[in-house]
Amino acid sequence: MSQKTYSVREVNEYIKAVLAKDPFLSNIVVEGEVSSVKYHSSGHLYIDLKEEVVSRGRKVVEQLKVVMWASNVRSMNFNVEVGQKILVTGGVSIYGSGYQVYANKIVLAGAGLLYERFEQLKRELYEKGLFDEMYKQPIPTYALNIGVATASTGAVIQDIRNVASRRNKYVNIVLKPCTVQGSDAAVSIVNAIHTLDAMDLDVIIVGRGGGSIEDLWCFNEEIVAQAIFDCKTPIISAVGHETDFTIADYVADLRAPTPSAAAELAVFEYDVFVRQLEYYMDTLKGSLQQRIDSSKNNLQSIRETLGMVMQNNVNHKKTMLEQTAKRLTLLSPKSKLASYKTNVEQVSQKLNEAVNRKVENSRYQIRLLAEQLHSCSPLTKMSSGFGHISQKGSTIVSVKDVKKSESIKVTLKDGFIDATVNDVEQSDWLNK
Image 1 (tube, one colour):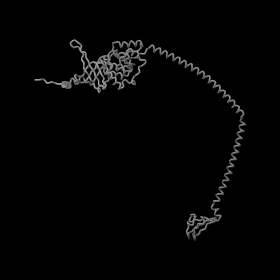
Image 2 (image 1 turned 135 degrees about the vertical axis):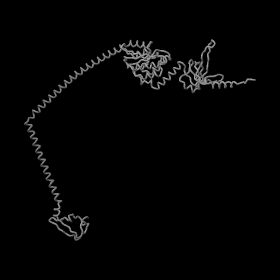
Image 3 (image 1 turned 60 degrees about the vertical axis):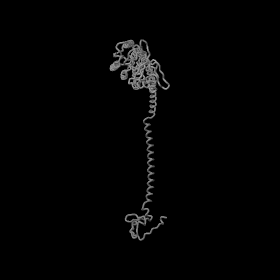
Image 4 (image 1 turned 180 degrees about the vertical axis):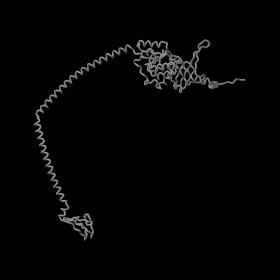
């Protein structure tokens, strides 16, 4: 019985189908070192991963090809470089005569992975505002009570104490021991910060000595960042060496490159402070003496000016009194009385003349009014032949007011006439 023969394409398709159905290979995470990398103009990413192993007494380099499509490459926050240790998440499938991993996610492994987590947390806290300068508290210039959150043993606390003793022997260092490395370190640091914050200190130093990113990782935890941000006491971070940066450095009110530098920033120099006080005292004394001398000179000048003004006023008043005395001497009581009498006589004469003129004018006006009144009197009119005609007490002014055979009354200057109307004739000649 002959065995069936398959084509190359059929074999590849079969293997591809098997790989696609394998749940392990359809979603796998592979760790390896980047031996080659190529960013294609299309945006796709091509990587060769390698791993050196010892097989049968000799070193063997295992390799695996990785491809990531442009749509996934755009979501990466770092560039892949040769020598990096990376973690590739994706599925294995056949391509051509070989197989490769089709990646949907690539992150840095080991320290690189921690660095990625560091950058992600830094972005998140920045967006929340924990790094904003508006929340930074000023470090007191003359702090006397300084809290320190660090390990109870080691060079850090000793360096801080040495610097503090050298700069100012009167400063009080309060140590709250805490774990600064390991899985429990973040909680320990938070507790130390809370304890020191409740002690009404001037400033707190939080830190430790240098180390790898793994060693310093507790200072990159979000709970430590939040505790520093919420602390009411100003905090100086002093983590690692000058080139080491942690999340705590960004949140703290001030970042010191080393613990010793933090002590330099927190502890003021007593000798310099005393010299400054002496300088200020001397300056103040000199300024006060100048003010006193200037005030004395001003007072003397005021006294001299006031004396001259008062003397001038006295002389002026004296001159006025002398002139008044001369005028009073010239005006004796007798001459003054005669002057008053003359004035009274003149005023009386003028008053009599005004009254006489007023009386004469009034008499003239009365005569005019009397003549006008006499000319308007009914008696005067009747003396000229006019009479007053009435009927039942009402004055008749028109022929329309009476009718034929009615009785009327005619009043003349010397009596009355009762008459009867014989005829009524209306005429318009008087109106022409």
